[in-house]
Amino acid sequence: MIGPETAQVPGPRPVPAAAAAPRAGDQVTSVSIEPETGTPARRLLGVELLIVLGLSLGASGIGALISFADSLTQPIALGQQVATLNGSRAPGRPWIDLAWQLYYIARGLMPVALVGYLLVRESTSLRVLGFDLGDKRRDLGRGVLVAAAIGGTGLGLYLAAQAAGFNLTVAPSGLPDVWWRIPVLTASAWQNAILEEVIVVGYLLRRLGQLGWSWPAAVVASSVLRGSYHLYQGVGGLVGNMVMGAVFCLLYRRWGRVMPLVVAHALIDTVAFVGYALLAGHVSWLPTG
Image (cartoon, rainbow, N blue to C red):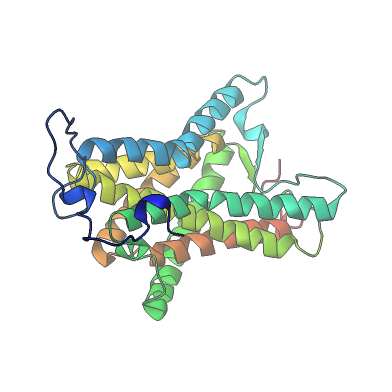
């Protein structure tokens, strides 16, 4: 819609405001954009990064720290406490429960949408992070291999940490046995994967590089962040995810794409969520709290 200020009128073509010379007394302000690149200046990049993390996984890390402190001060041991993921939000009311599940899955992807918008403002897109379907077959193959290598190792570390009392018992599913349980658990796994790999690997490493961080320092920051928001699980969750974070950063540097990491993460979480829902109470080796 053309507003009053931009309506065309007869007469000479007006000079664009950006090209007009400043008049005497005008206040000239600096624009925080790097010349000819459209990239925000470092100060704004730092503020942007803090805001994105504060709205997403940085806030989750602080919440996980508070949760871990609460668990440590409970009168029962860590190994006897239970951290339930994907719990019911409306017990006994499956349709309301489903609505809440879908709401939280969609809301969890909003930080990714924000990052996509910020990258468009930078004259690029999420494709610069390798988050696209341009190489589906290779991304899928790599993701499956990474999931197979890390998934089994992660399960072994969790079981050892839980048995040693360093970890809470993690219940990946607390959903009732209804028709939408498996689809919701799968969707939740993919939401986690997209959010974490786009934010903690692709976006974070890109921004830290633009801020002048060295590669080793950026890897440490990404790995610590990933571990921090898993601290609610206990020490095993912290350490295991820090190691996984370092491996994912190295793979991202080699491949230049987050999609294989999204696939790997989604497969690992899907097996964990759905496997727990199907096996809990039926096998002796799986802790259920």
